[in-house]
Amino acid sequence: MTGAKPYKERGATLIISMIFLLILSIIGLAGMDVTSLEEKMAGNMRDRNMAFQSAEAALRDGEDYLESIVVLPAFDGNNGLYALPTDGTKRWETVSWANPSDVRSYSGAGFGELAGSSAYIVEDLAAAASSDSLEVGTPADTKRFYRVTGRAVGLTSSSEVIVQSVYKR
Image (cartoon, rainbow, N blue to C red; front, side, top):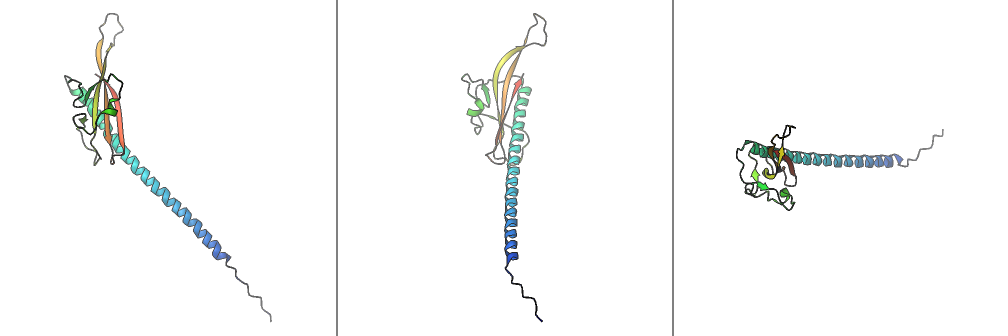
């Protein structure tokens, strides 16, 4: 009786399974990196959204200030009230937002633990005559225009948001 020759193993299964394990490990690590990046993006978006909401609230506070005050004070550069710059500079870029005497602080409800306080400035732009009547000889009402700029930072100081509106009174 002669039996079959014993088959000599060569270890191909072990090599293939090791390569397969390496490929799965690489896919798993790439998935972890993507998840980490998505988490960072979500945190940054929340940070910017908090800054935007706070800046928008400061902007509305400035508009409410213009609406509620009966006699407007002088726009002399104090307390966040500025005249239109004659040299064309952008006031919101040159003002010191950290100095309370240069800006008006937001006085409404808080937004949690922001990295800084929300504030706004009001610029007196110009007066313009307007009339709802098309009739000749009808006197025109003089309306004044103001640029309100709100600024806020989010949960970190790296997320700064500035919003503006033009308000007619």
